[in-house]
Image (cartoon, rainbow, N blue to C red; front, side, top):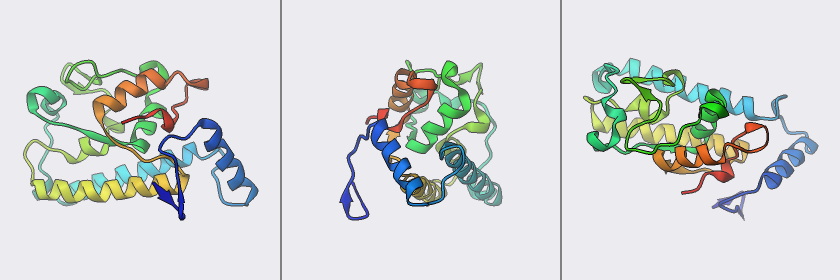
Length: 190
């Protein structure tokens, strides 16, 4: 992966990330008072809000979610969900280390009794996918959302990953036990 003409390693240590943050501060570049993480969450909120507006504004193409939970049973629905690094970081921040769940079967672990327990923080793919919708609309919207997440990664110098949900959740559940319960993007492997 190249950024600004130099090669970036696929996996970056926490120390390397901190060194970049320190260098940014020394160079006088803007950084959120909370060290950047809250600012990243705000950026992800902006993407999710944008997605929700696109879906509401194109309801004839987007379809209507009945919140039945069938799409959360990936194996029986023959559905594969992919997420990005910023989304996994967002989930880790919003659900807390004590609520991290691995995906041990082909069903979304946050769907309990047919209802999504993280619905306000659900991933972009969960927002975009509807059982009955125009797949071209879904694909276009997905591509635009991915561009927005890549932009967040570039802005905050976060390693970008587009990874299947099962791998992401299992790695998150294993690696969330970092100092202070913080998720580190270099722990997300593909």
